[in-house]
Length: 399
Image (cartoon, rainbow, N blue to C red):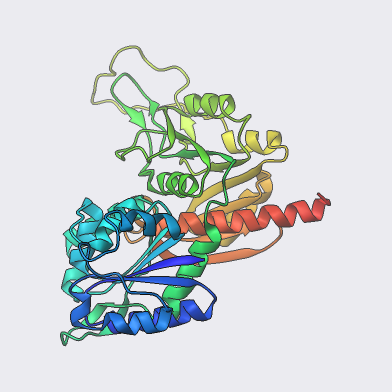
């Protein structure tokens, strides 16, 4: 594979030479691109010697006025390591004032970003917001390690091990657009079941996991249909979003859009009960105690399990205890191919968090644990395992 290695200005720039060496060792062609600040820490000649190619440094010292376009078209993946807080901000906001950032805007392939900076800079809300912007674009963020930093502090911010960065690049290179030609149907968010014209029953689902799945599928080439309950999230780029409010509306839209889908991911937290007869006017508060008789909402996942045919069906199980057992139970009772289980109720992972930690119960009998990571990264891991599972199921069926 042809890979662009962008090198930002930071003390960790010297580690990029090892990344270049490891990529070359794996058989990749590497084009190094350095910022002006990076050249204060390591020489362009080092990368030229390792890669066998001239290191690109200056936007105005190039052979052609459109060299950044040709380099973008010739290469298949971009990795930026180290990525400083400043460089991350420029990438997030589309600023193009040197060869690397101009090249980034012209590049259309997968991007891997490995940050390196002071702990306080890493934790700053501006840096985290910029990283989230890059994640939403589908970029892979290789989280920094914790440890002793050049500034004398101890904490997160140290560039990840070169081997770990190369491994992330390898995973991204294998991924590519492996969902080209697929239609993926995803549900996300909560539903709201009305009690009267102004009140409703719902849950704490933010929709972040479902939206991350939609972004991941679209980045991998799929046509994505996202059926979303009420959330406060921007529509993912390149995704067809259908907004619904109640469980009944979600069921209707899922069945309407089921036919073209080869993969169905039921990530929505559908309310389990609803009021079958909703008053036309607001119910007034009184001193008397009130009881409600609630009926179950339609079990969309179970219905899909009966109708799935050759489709790959992925369900979700949000639990507060017995996670492994409940994920397996749901896998069998709903006739799913995979159930993604996660514990909810805490603040670090789950509904409102930007991170998740899940187990995958597979119809092959496997139970895989995915450690805590940003939901966008978890989404890609879910699709990685889903595609492996489909191959295994097809092989078992003799197809």
